[in-house]
Length: 226
Ligand code: NI
Ligand code: MN
Image (cartoon, rainbow, N blue to C red; front, side, top):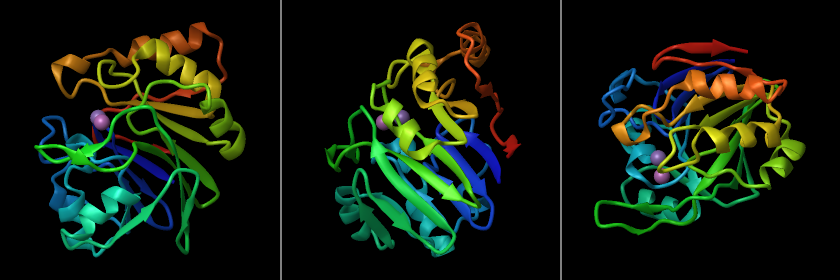
């Protein structure tokens, strides 16, 4: 599987299928690609905030790809003319080559410029080609991450470190300790001044804690192969 960071919380997982997560591109000064340059078979959106839903509707229509998200957000997106697959926390959406299990996140979740309720925030475990990638969504650290680690044994964890809207480095180190992935890739930092963060500080803090986790720091548009 090739994991490409498109900036912020947007990732493209390429294996048998192309799974796109939280494609916030056109409003992101650090985005690696324009929405029209991205190809996807399945799109997963963790919650309705603009920096996660991003360009999902446009990309879904262009690629004829479904958007997997929480039920309430799927109702809103369906009215915008996309194939939105609504599910809920603890459930698994099964496709031929891909499974997406929705898990908790500790955050808020609404939609639009005059926000309307759009269900709960979520994270997701994407399973493809025998590998599992845990995208936490926007979240603080929470103790049930230990349970997520035990149940789904993620190979890779995509973890926010930017602080302010999510956990910062201290929380992210604890999150990695609870989940115990093989590899962790930091996200949700340096997009806006308020979430400026040095990812090397995260890497050093994980190493100082003695955790058996490889921290992979990507620049937008860089990939990691696993
Ligand atoms: Ni958010
Ligand atoms: Mn966010």
